Image 1 (cartoon, rainbow, N blue to C red):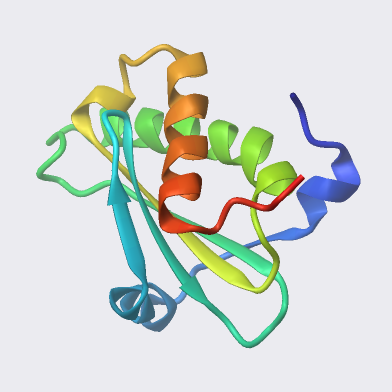
Image 2 (cartoon, rainbow, N blue to C red; image 1 turned 30 degrees about the horizontal axis):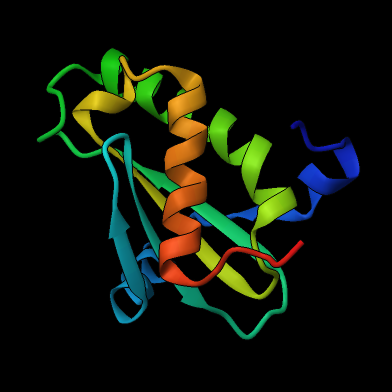
Length: 121
């Protein structure tokens, strides 16, 4: 299940710290491979952010690898399964770096389902 280029363009990136801080008011779900935070926005578009703290791993190289894996999973799942008008933040965990890709995809779908933001197909 891969998104088309047009579907990928529908995802906007969260970059401002204030947008990440708004996520405290939303919902959060923890899985083995990642943590998902969701919060409604007034813009009517899907926005996504990624974060991995130094507590996960001291090495910047390792943290960047985790973020790349999260970006790839989000690109495959969110354009097809996530609702519009919602901000999504994926938080990396230690297991994100070594967990099989298919299981990371399943983790993201499961988190979307549990938070109630899975788009009904």
